[in-house]
Image 1 (tube, rainbow, N blue to C red):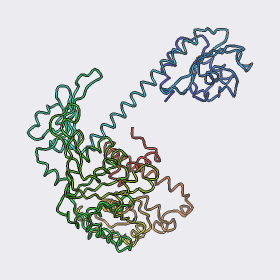
Image 2 (image 1 turned 90 degrees about the horizontal axis):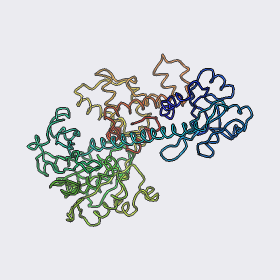
Image 3 (image 1 turned 90 degrees about the vertical axis):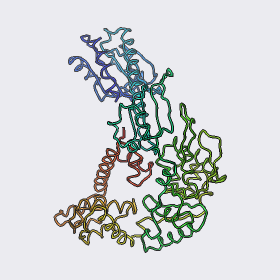
Image 4 (image 1 turned 135 degrees about the vertical axis):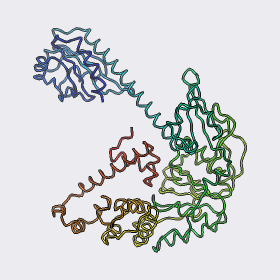
Length: 572
């Protein structure tokens, strides 16, 4: 990156000294030369003195010199002739200046080097001027990088917002809409862009409008939150469906039977419930079953994924906001999830991801049974039964200061742990049969014949994604089989490589026996490559929306970030 930024400046600087036996060079922050330009004859002579790419000119290695001393004193300096520590360098004159990043850290040194008898003190001025130009380029690049980051953040907010959002320019022409707005308007963005927002007032109700201003306070556009012209009751019903019953939780394992038993006890109670288990174990299925067997069964069931909502928006999502609570807002407002769930159940998934400041607000609601909309003053009574879910150890998170201890005790009244699939493998054949029938019906295909070896792979695999992963794998292999018999060739790589090597060789007779000594790290490398490709494909399909990818994978955003870092996947 440093070479890329400085290359043009170095070429321009060299024009000033062309034909004078001077060369221009760039070092990194440790004193190693990483770029150099000069006439061929001068460069050949310079190489005899190790003035070449890869050479170290740190002061501790070669004593006083331009690059090394500039790094040490962190200032521009000119070293000529006998001022060099090494006698062999007395022929040269070096004018060097350190290059700083936007935080004041040295990231390199720029230097002009030539015969000492041709040196001039103005040479150092040229170098300092060039370094200032490089600094401007670095700051500009950082500004553009931050601008792109802010743009990506805004794009993510637009894509995950539960309301329709329309962005207009200063003339009221639409320049951008989010997916929810496309659904409300029943049109794609290219068909909407350029039209006036007033053309759609018969279809939608603008519940919020925020003006966009530049640094001179001039209005440059607006952001409009829209709903369909239906009433809140319709919105409540749309967001409040619970379809799963306890009969939908399949398993003969003792742990899962105990889970169901505790769930039924929770259904008969009015106390709050905390569901704990890994991603994909079926926490929301159990939450819906508890709701449907409770006395609130005919009331709303509203689910909120606390890990998928930006921390800036979670307050308005939970508690709603009054019209006029934001700059330039019109009359209106928004019902929060507590209001929508009043009388029924509010399911807070990934509660461990909730920001501390919102944990305080949630605790107050649990204590007072009332909420206050953002920007409002009126206390609104709510009658909500809370079911929370997490894949974290909240007791441990509380000890670390990441989760409020008082909120943990308030929520942890009835605690139910859902076992991971690897601890209830006797249930895999039952789940396999259920999902095969269900997915074949969805795909409108006949149930295929199945190679018995397939089940041995299903039983061997540890299922880090649990029941959700099991269901997704079955749907995947049914698509790959395309109506033909299911065999191990349809299984994903991670399942194949999780099986003992000798069994893999037995199933693939053409495989050479050398595979038997395949190193574990090679297998891991293949799995990582497979996972990297799958995640990159999902990022492309989701247009870079990390929250959407995390939901599709059945993992939290934090887990996704760790995977991106581990697999060296950039989202910029």
